[in-house]
Image 1: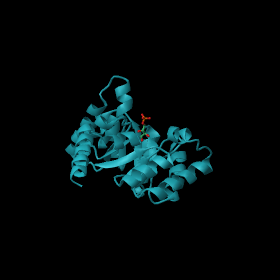
Image 2 (image 1 turned 180 degrees about the horizontal axis):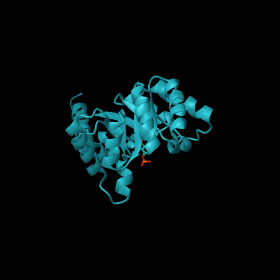
Image 3 (image 1 turned 30 degrees about the vertical axis):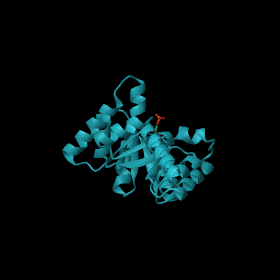
Image 4 (image 1 turned 90 degrees about the vertical axis):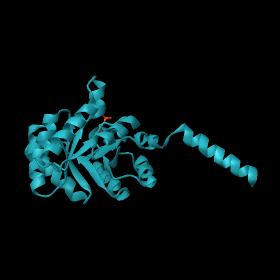
Length: 217
Ligand code: E4P
């Protein structure tokens, strides 16, 4: 299972990278705005800065919602760095653009996916990644993890190579449940990754080992 961090915060990206378990980064316009990154030029520079920190795929989202605009913007983003994955919204024009980039061998991430049917379309269009938003489904009393399971079954049935990128992950149990279901990738905040470290018995056990060592030395 690949671990992506879902942020545009360079410090958090460095922290996750230094832990040695990071496989990539996802961003979106809201995450860029949260870091105060505005203006086309600054946004493009920020994507390159992220690519310079991590070794894996970095999703950069298009703003255009028409086919020609998405193609133009996606080509510009893909040209920035070899690690850039063009992130496209799950709308009709986005599916067409995913097919266009897939035919050109440019990686894509189809985002804002909330149903198995949308995930099927993304796979048919040859998307590299599909991003079902599990946390946002949970927010509206719908089982986000069930969507991951449905997509896993459908992709297995037909051998689709599109990777299931469980997005909108909010906490460690999302990560563990996605791993049990077989999501290829998860993307979440740093806390969802670092939280996996925690167990009180580890802390108690380590304290006892150190105390016992001190008694004899
Ligand atoms: C996915 O790529 C999105 O950036 C993200 O996971 C959205 O998460 P949120 O629902 O916590 O905003």
